[in-house]
Image (cartoon, rainbow, N blue to C red; front, side, top):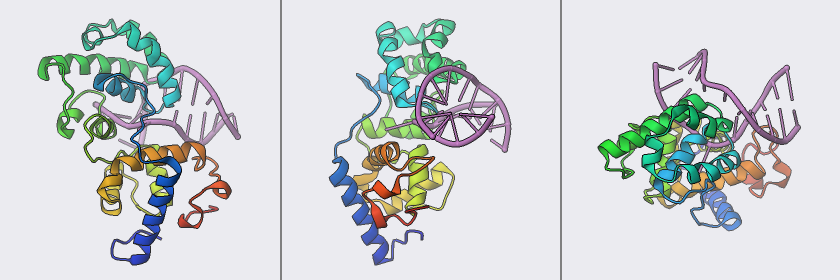
Length: 217
DNA sequence: CTCCCGATAT
DNA sequence: ATATCAGGAG
């Protein structure tokens, strides 16, 4: 049961889902990663790859005290930084990427975080998902973040049949009204962590009910 | 497609 | 033991 932009029932079902999400979770652009500025959000988002945001917030609490400027990350001893972020997993890559991203930002961007997708993804460790988090959260640019929850649940809801995150992003751009692009990720993460679990979705207690074609599966 | 990788829940 | 977690790069 795939979404069809020319089908009134599809549009109605989409609107019902968006309305239910808005009423349940609100329309505020909340962020689950603790940060005080754009750079800290970038670091936290790099760390969040294949790691819970809860764990990231534990790590960054001390990390952002020890490295309180971009310059300190740029000059960090890589072995020390690896230990500081080890609990996030993939720590060799992440430590190197965070340090090199800081260096590149200071050299090429005067220490400012760019808003352009190409410029953001040119930074080491920053892919499309991380770049869109920054664009949406820091610059308020309509952008769809396709993470593991959006990938899984957008498929369940019949909003995409794709598996490639970029194709999913383009499908969702057609399905979702632009004022819900940023909200979609926030709402779907909240839903995915509380009801629509990856392992064992709690369909019986899901407020989307029959709006979801995958109910009970 | 594979590798990177620790912490937690089931 | 295994699946999963705000993915990215080679």
